[in-house]
Length: 90
Image: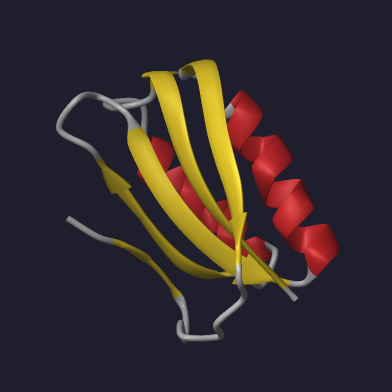
């Protein structure tokens, strides 16, 4: 099991990035959260099976159809199993 903390930069707010992130995470059976940051970036933490976490990370590099992802800062963190589902937080 694996956990990633990711911050995505570019045109990622106002393009349904959070909703698509949640949908993709749920499809991959990942748990965690996603939120907008005040500076226009999106932050997400997700946990699950290694291959699913990797697939989610690759998705973050592309984003939604209307997003323009410029940079993805990803850091692996210790898996905690603290989440029950995947949520959009505010």
